[in-house]
Each structure stands twice: as structure tokens, then as C-alpha cells.
Image (tube, rainbow, N blue to C red; front, side, top):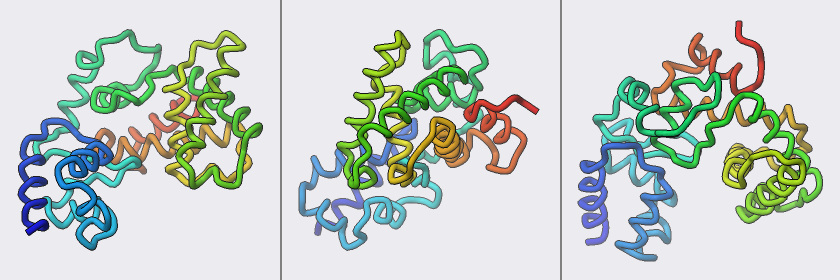
Length: 227
């Protein structure tokens, strides 16, 4: 039956994983394999993540935003030690190792300096104040509109920030449920810091949210001086 076939597919795909896989990518694969018969309701679980949690070992589904499927042999220490080599690009000054490790597994994560994060959040704030709409927190198209206008604002001032980098910040606001707010640049930056730090913790790149390592990274993301 469909449930058994899906379980066999999911278990086999999971056994092949060597790197964390975004749940969105897994959803795409499952839709391609089984079509609407699966994705319309996810076998009664309503959400794919709940279905995967039932079918896979504990801890396989990382409740980051966006969610990730984490292989059983994934070791955060190895990700930290190999991150720079895997990314293969010049890093902004002061970039923490955990940020490089996340970029190695999530190519869309923007490697920006602390100052660049601040400027990027400023452009996103300007864009949001201009085009804020009632549907902003519900419609994924708003993220595209927001990142496009933010990129145009940055380009007009000669700032070298890509639409993808600005879009990642906009995506963080949407997934966090913050787009309905009137947002200042600093508010956006603090929300973004929370979003990214949650990803670090969920993937084991920092040992926990209330640790010195997490606080150091949070300060870098939020633009605060180190202790």
C-alpha cells in the first residue's frame, strides 16, 4: 500500500544521507515519487515533518526553521572542522566557525560580516515599510517582493548585497511570523539573530541556547560587542 511504499522510500533515502537535507527538498522528492496521493494530507499526518518523525529515528527531523533532515552519522564537530574547506570562498572578517559550517550544508545561508548584516537589515526594513501588506505573513510571494525592493535600495546606494542574501533575511522574518509587525532595522536584526541561532542549536553546531558559545554567536549576529 501507499504507506508502506512511502516508508520504504523514506528509510532508504535517509540511509543515503551524508549531509543535512532541507525538508523542502525532501518534500519535492516525495511529490515527484508519489504525487498528490501523498502530499494531500501526508498519510493523515497533515504535515510532512510529523510523518517523517513517525517513520525515522528520534532526532532525524531537526525542528529548525526551515526544517532539516539530519543523518544519523552527522557530527557537528566534523562540520565545524571542515566548513571552511567546503565553502571555498573568502570569508568576511570575524565570521564564526559555526556560520561557515552552516553555509557548508545550506548554500543559501549568507556569509556576511557583522556590519553587512546590519546594513542588509536596514534595507529590508526600508522595503518592508514601503510595501507592507495585510497578507505579508501568509503569502510567500511577499518575500520575493521584499527581497527585490531591498536589493534595489541597496544597489541604488552602491551596497554589494545580493537579492539572495537579502531574501534569506526576509525568509527568516516570514518563518518566524514577524512580517505583520512594524519593523525597525534593529528589530529585524534581533529577529534574524534568533532565527539563525535556532538553526545552529538544532543542528548541534552550538551546544545549547543558554551557553557562552551561543551568546558569542548571538552578539555577532545582533551587532553587539563581545563580552
